[in-house]
Length: 109
Length: 114
Image 1 (cartoon, chains in turn purple, cyan):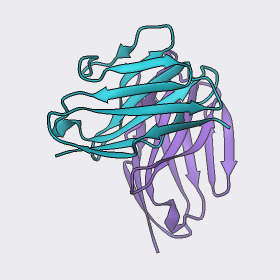
Image 2 (cartoon, helix red, strand yellow):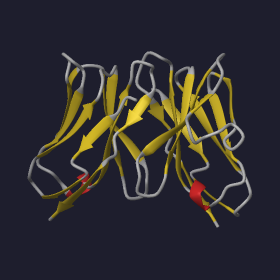
Image 3 (cartoon, chains in turn red, brown):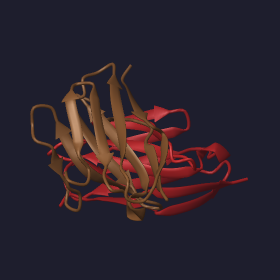
Image 4 (cartoon, helix red, strand yellow):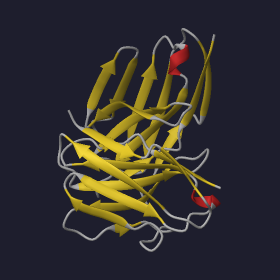
């Protein structure tokens, strides 16, 4: 079936550095959402993209508009509060949301 | 704006008992509601997708007998975990959409089974 491959599974960064997370889709997706889950389990919605790119502060996300088979999340100037587990979730052609396996991000001082 | 309220946020139930969780959509019409479970240290798995005026579709490994869902109108959905056991523990999440926009999620219900 349709799958979402998220990478990396874990990432450790120092404050002030930049990083990128990626989700590859085995098939064309209608849209993608990115979330951060904090240590208490709460899910925070970061971006919803049907195409193109969106930027919010130090975060920027892109969804491949041509083939719609990957999305990226860029974190610029990482801060301690960026720590958490990041998930992408893509909407397949049958409207079902398929989740990536998550990226555990640790920001070190 | 569009919001989904999910409650309770946390619950503890004795092994073999049941618990119910609810989601309320505000600011949009929840024509579709999906319920997910995140087991400890894992990603989210789809339990079932409910669309108003259609049959509820359960994923493999999940059944209506174990996770009955109600979706009576465009603003409310509930799911019950029947006869909960240790393997049912985790974070349960509802996601709702009106078919034209992103999926809006509740904050989740964390189930602990003792």
